[in-house]
Length: 338
Image 1 (cartoon, rainbow, N blue to C red):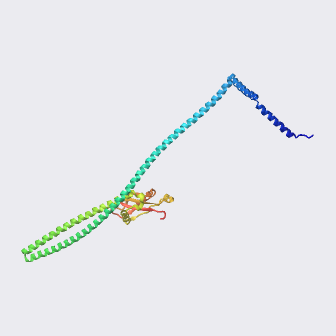
Image 2: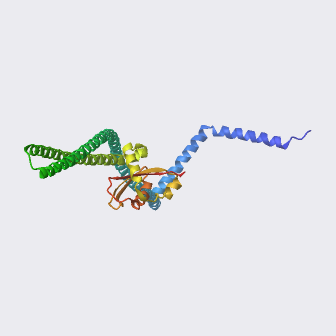
Image 3: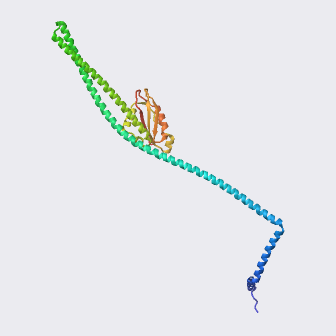
């Protein structure tokens, strides 16, 4: 007789017990009894609470306190949210106002840009017209100067003839004094005196014409100076966009003429910040010059504003030859390689 393995025996018993347990659980009677038991338990708890008001009150208090705490918390959170919403709404309104301002500024800048373009176009057309007018006026002045020289020569010839005629009359008078007067001599002398008188009238007319021509030249030169100043003012306004390349040949010629009359000068200092940033630029300077050659009312328009202050300070220390000057004009270039 052989002994059975205890481990195998225990597993078999466990399997049978598990099978019996499942069968028991599937029994409707057992299930019904379990459900009834749970219901009775719940009813007992309910009626027990009903018979113990203190328990019910405590439960209600706890629930009420918890609900009140939740309500307070939700109310606080809701208040915070409302405040946050109001803040965001104000920020939104502020941003909308700022956006409107920026749009208005952008519109103004566009209008200014269009005006500047139109002004630049008009100034270029005016410069071309003025350049032609100045060239024509200069040609007229040259012709007038030639005419004045011719009149001067004519006057000199007339004056020479007057001297000769006067000497001749003096000779006749001397002869008459020596030999006595005669009718033919008197007639000849009268004719010569009339001729001299006519020459003198012509000389006076020539001198008056010379004065008129000289006045006309002075007026035209003043007009040329005024046109040159107007061109410089127009170019000054639009200089920032074009720099020295946008200046007319008339303005450049005026700048060179003024440079030839400088007695003392100091070059503007290169701004340190501009050097550090690698900024280059150009400046166009307008100013007036007194009789002693000292500048005043100095203005500078630069391609970058960082160069303006130092340029104005430098030009204020310039000195020119004494005299009368039109509107002073100078240009300066700031290059990192210089």
